[in-house]
Length: 196
Image (cartoon, rainbow, N blue to C red):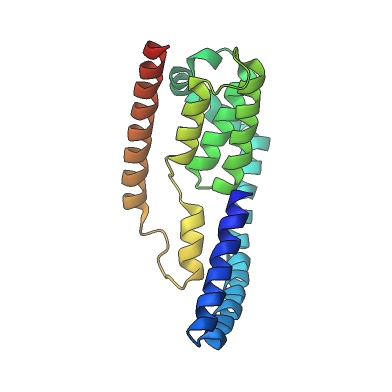
């Protein structure tokens, strides 16, 4: 709701400023061009997203996702110790991490929401985010991306001939952001526990 108000406010302010400065026609032209560009970008992105969503589905059906989940289990068990023995929660978290590794933020978000719901149902304190839920939000937001498909798709749609040449920078930035996020979540978790 808040985002709808913010976006509506930005549009209204833009139109009013355009009219007051005598640039109403330029604002209308820019709005139409922007809408057309958004449709073109959406169509270009659809192919890339369909490809990698298909890869995720093939991984799931072939059992590769389950093997990846088992491979991630020791690491995820350390990040989410209170759910280490809960197969359903760990499976949802693993699916979220797998989608993020492939750069599929659109697929990772519903998987993260499902994991958060399961954590909430099994949580001890209802209505209060546990350390594990906070860690899930951090790891989902600052995820490591091996293949940044969404960014590469946008670059390809914008005419880039080598959309994946950003891989080393993406790997470095995502590893640093995840490390800082996990460290901050652990430190704040201890800080709040000591205050309680």
